[in-house]
Image (tube, rainbow, N blue to C red; front, side):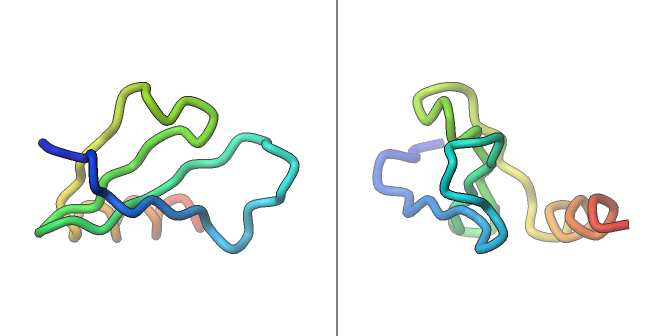
Amino acid sequence: MELTNARWRKSSHSGGNGGECVEVADLAGVVAVRDSKDPDGPKLALDRTVFRALVTRIKK
């Protein structure tokens, strides 16, 4: 999956201290996820339905 032009964003709940954050990018049909401390490292591409389910479980 090509992620060169992806527009990554952090949660508004992330602090500015460089802590443990993830970034997400909306792509065609999927949501990509990466570690903000390692932007060149591995990335996950999740179906939007799966991503919503993951966020719901994390919030619980």
